[in-house]
Length: 66
Image 1 (cartoon, helix red, strand yellow):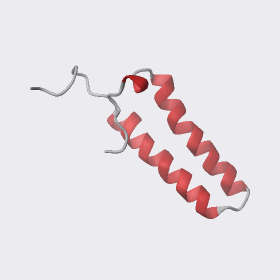
Image 2 (cartoon, one colour; image 1 turned 135 degrees about the vertical axis):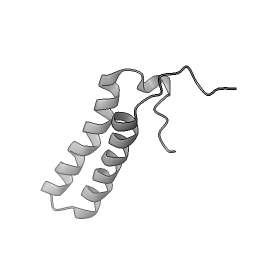
Image 3 (spheres, helix red, strand yellow; image 1 turned 90 degrees about the vertical axis):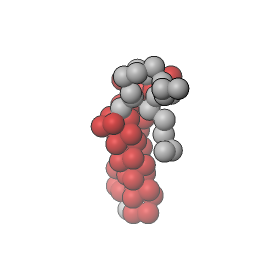
Image 4 (tube, helix red, strand yellow; image 1 turned 30 degrees about the vertical axis):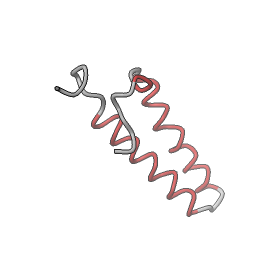
């Protein structure tokens, strides 16, 4: 997986939301400038981040069982 939702950087909710909203906003900006390629690229990145950070989210346990 490209994004590790269990990384300490993503512990706070506002950080996870910001990591989704920023590329989504940039995709909308690129779309408004008629740059379809970049809009799709950043929209896809926002979708992947949404799935990894919001839908799946961090695990409740402290790490992998050993």
